[in-house]
Length: 330
Image (cartoon, rainbow, N blue to C red):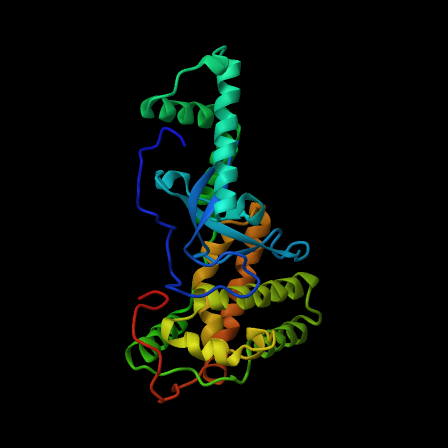
């Protein structure tokens, strides 16, 4: 695809969700072999959503727009440097019919290349080395603009933005996270569902707290809480559950029930560990990002202040029936 060295391992980025199954709205399953458009050609790839991402096109400010599924793809046989997030419009199922489309497109690209270079239909069959060079040339010519754009975004996203996205979790809440991990993964205990208060109720309590404290909660607070709720509902099954909690999730979330009306502070706190990673992918002005960070930190202080009320002191002692294995961050 480019000048990067080959890498036959089909990696898919930092997988933090183990073998979590996607929600029904996802077209492709985690780890599925697909066909993906890149420039003028179609390549075999592996699709995953190990950093969830029903992305929000414009997070929190000025409004929350419709979610769009994104998949992290690794092009099979190519360096990890080409791994990227793509929308469903660039993916196809790996079926015999679509493979034929891939071959037809490859043939067309080769014919077009021969015509432009003056070789026409008299061109001899290429050696494997020539074919590879052609692939390099196509990538180089077609993807230069795309690569420049991606590099610019990457420089902003993985450099400047990631440095700016810092959510300091209070020490007592960090201990809460450690205890949470130990209860589920080491002691085989689960949070009993439904929780009280739920995530929805905690967010409402925070809004009431800010309204009472400041006289009137600014509109931005309401938008942020909507964003937290939306991110929680989308991220929970994809990256916030340990493996031993998945059966419980499938039993609890039925008939399109929102997880934020079933789960509580324990799982909500896990989201804040992942938010810096999620926000690094969002195009947001530095000033806006700074305001958002301060409001998220303020919300964490609210959780800390109400820690004894919002969090369980002990989990359900019933042993988990699901098989043991690596969970979210084990």
